[in-house]
Image (cartoon, rainbow over all chains, first blue to last red; front, side, top):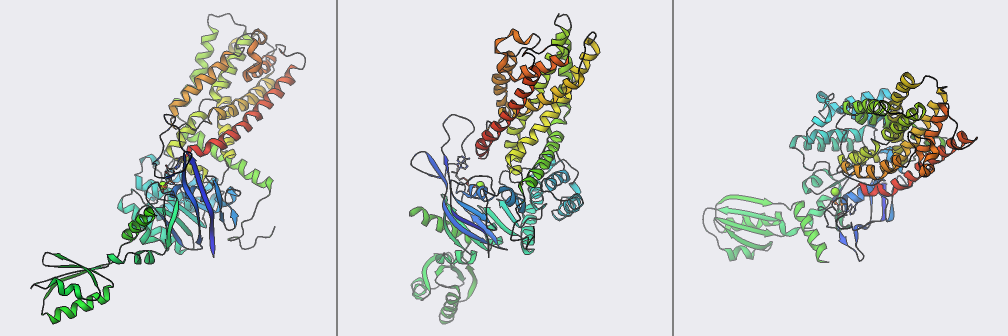
Length: 330
Length: 264
Ligand SMILES: Nc1ncnc2c1ncn2[C@@H]1O[C@H](COP(=O)(O)OP(=O)(O)O)[C@@H](O)[C@H]1O
Ligand SMILES: [Mg+2]
């Protein structure tokens, strides 16, 4: 059952004129013919109920622009987003009412305390007064901000501000949570708390859409990941399947005390490539399991003594780079 | 209306109840603005001393008639204070990132703009009451003052100037300092073409300034006859209401367009 449907969504920006106004953002978007940036270029996908969906891509890929269209902040140039079957742009208020948001460069009100920030947001969403205070306090406790609740938030660290923003997004008990780069640039403790609570709220049934340029975050949290670059989705799959795309990164290192013949190792059926390293070999294999079995047999036959054996599982990062490279070639 | 499985079927509210909630939320935004931006010692000090200094600067050693003096200072303070903070708050919230946060809340841009009107209105009205009080204390002898008309005129004018303030706030400026330029090129010329401290008919450009109609209402309230004939008061009120809604709808349209440029 999908809760968010994105159909042929596109957003084009005209190029900012030179020497006027603020400075343009990172110019990674694909340039169109007439000074147009195709920040998001005709993408379609669905987000299922109860999943954590990750939007992964390098800077300037179009993640923020997409999330802004999904949350009713930007009007799509083409296509549409629907949430629970309602067109987001046409039913902005209705949709905003049931979603929670942490925009990328958003901030808390510096002159309000942590608690006042939450009370303000609660009031704007129409949370009844009693519920508001209770919910604010329990969120502050959960996000380890309760002690600092009466401190003006200008005195919060970056991580504390981000945690407070997440609390603000949760004040209205949203069904869907949109998080734009929720953990980027944060201290370890804040990032850990945020990741943990993203999982916790997801287990309670909140559908989560997040963007990140960090493979590890996507890998750790997401059920499915869409990889976006130059405004286009170039891959959409589970982290496991994405990782499987990088066969060549399955590798085994082994070290032994006495010498062995490189040519013989290369003859092993599962070994694709051999590199000699000091005191051993770095093998790129078809399959980790078969590779190990063959190596063990080989060692027994040649009376070698193993000092150390390591395996390398493919990393999402490798898959990501590979997919991006492949996309750039086309 | 039956609510079936709230989670999947969003209930659409009627137009009237949407209007009611949005109006309520505009007050919440006002409360926030008053708390964060207006309730600051420098802002309050300026708000109090600016009218006082203006009052004595124009009163002492000049021979302006008391009616024009009172109406002129009230109108000037109303105009300048109602348009002072709004144009700074928008760029300020834009660079801080709180503006984008607010737009993801269930409020329309119109609600945000109306929220901004209320705070400009309260601020303008509050501080323009200072010259009124000073005028009554020092200059009112011999004047037949219609307080109801004066206060009603101040309320109406403050609303009009507050919606005018939204238009000055509409360029998607990211640097609050840059709004000074707009202020100098829009606000001061408007004061210049207005018949402050003089009979309204003595300047030809008066009719195109919104401040003129505020002045005329105040003058009438202070016992003068209207500059626009026997239906003058009615004309003033209709023009002010027309301008107020005109500025408001213009501001809605422009802000809707420039909104996108605030997000980079
Ligand atoms: N308001 C805007 N005006 C013009 N160009 C923009 C605007 N917002 C984003 N862009 C451009 O669109 C592209 C995608 O940006 P963005 O969605 O912010 O990427 P990401 O979030 O993936 O880093 C970039 O090239 C950026 O410069
Ligand atoms: Mg981004």
